[in-house]
Image (cartoon, rainbow, N blue to C red; front, side, top):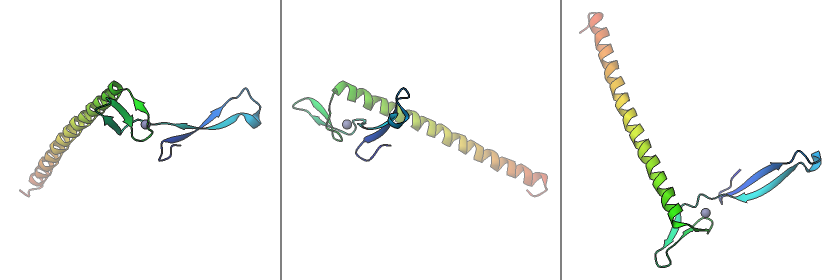
Length: 105
Ligand SMILES: [Zn+2]
């Protein structure tokens, strides 16, 4: 379970230990390190959530991958909208064909 500060509670199990000490709760910090703050003078990137100093190239890669994913979702959404419009036109044609078959133009 992760809280708003990015702290995660992990349950560790060690089945080689006696049952009363088999499980341990451990708090860890997980952060995706975005958003981040860029110091152009110092040429550093710092996570604004956890304060970690980050590798600027790793941040660049993370942003690029995220943008690629957004573009993929946009393409998928456009294709689905096109498919929906095609299905709507097909329904309209089928209803018109039904009306003609029933003698109602
Ligand atoms: Zn962070």
